[in-house]
Image 1 (cartoon, rainbow, N blue to C red):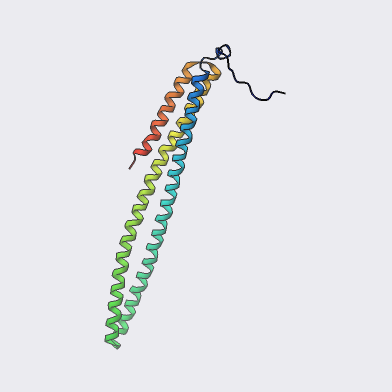
Image 2 (image 1 turned 90 degrees about the vertical axis):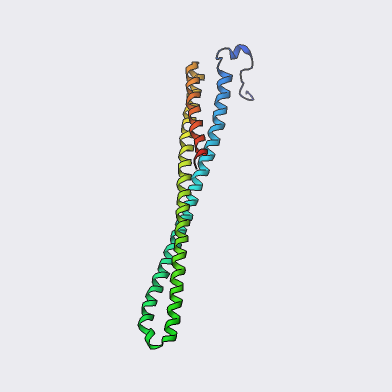
Length: 179
């Protein structure tokens, strides 16, 4: 029973396919590039989801502030009705309500800005992920076409595969250039 797979070691055996070594090296290199671009794609998608979650949390906080603001406004209406009965207490409660309303308005503006910034970061991460995904797909297609060289022994497949892979790598690299 054989102990392993035998690889061609002599020049005579390699002579059947002169593309074996260079195409194998190309395929191995493309596989490493696919892995790297895939990793960057996954990270960009994770960043996109994280920013979406953070933005959603900020919008929920905005809603909570809106509810508190509305409650304070209704409280101010009630106080304005009851205030004539005890002017000192009525004025104190009115001042407190006015301060709270200003606080809620300022908080809502800050929250809105933060949420919109997070949404912009999310959109950027999504565009980066799209670039990495496209680059990954082209690299994979290039890798498969290069591998056809080993079956067909035609140099055209090797060159075509490398051109497609180069386009994929270029497309993926544009993901780093987006800001």
